[in-house]
Length: 369
Figure 1 (spheres, helix red, strand yellow):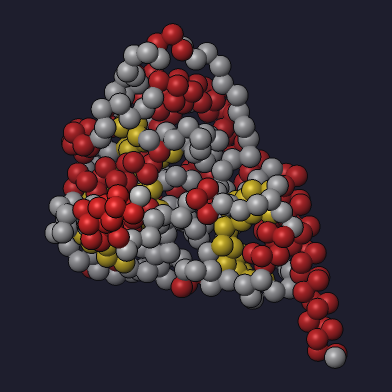
Figure 2 (cartoon, one colour):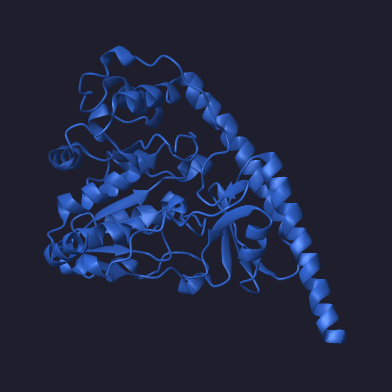
């Protein structure tokens, strides 16, 4: 075992030895009966009609029904779509397609989704960071701070802040970079704020890419199915890089069902419920002691900044698992709460209230002693 490990370290690319992998919610883990740390949907929808008689055969490279249904849903041409293993694969495909290792650069606007930087690092591509402003908006001089980047990644709505950007804010950036850089808008959470989508501008700008997923609003995180939306030239280049069978047959079948008329209608109904739960939750906790800010969110989660770092542990002790963001410099004392079921959100609000009262009583006791 020692010899094998030593050989692996000798042969590995040096930069990988010190790299920290992306810390997904499942990788971090936790214990509890209320899981609100991965921005998953609380709705477990059911699907039928699997054709297991064909599973001895390789699946279609791009399942025709899946692509047609997503084209209908997104109001795009089929030639402008590429189905991928979640949006994560699309991120890596773009970097592998348009960035030369040890030469090219991507730009990200932090704090944001961590896989942009991880995917770049695994491809030995430099990451240029342009921080968001204090109110989580893009730097006014962003287009002048790209350092020659081939790709600019913008998450909208942004994870983990929940902040949003309108097409009126984003289109000038795409236009300014149309002969310089591909602008990638990650719309993983767009169903919760559909008015913000940039997908309708793909026909207009050949440097615009939009990423989508079925993991959030469609409640299919376990399926791992996403989409790259772009002009035909970008899609055809990405097809040269992607694996030969990226979408397994069961994934294609289930995803196609989720994207039919009934599936889309169900998604819209569930999104409306989750958006209302997010609004209610934000109001319920806004006045609690020790809370500095409850940030507006355009997604299925809410970012909250507390006055100290004790709340994550106290919630864990109460059986509630959330995402701790305090390790990020600009997110000190911040926790991200995924929007769960109505029952889960009521329990979360009640536990937060109990913790607030207990902390206040403890502080009062310490002062009077």
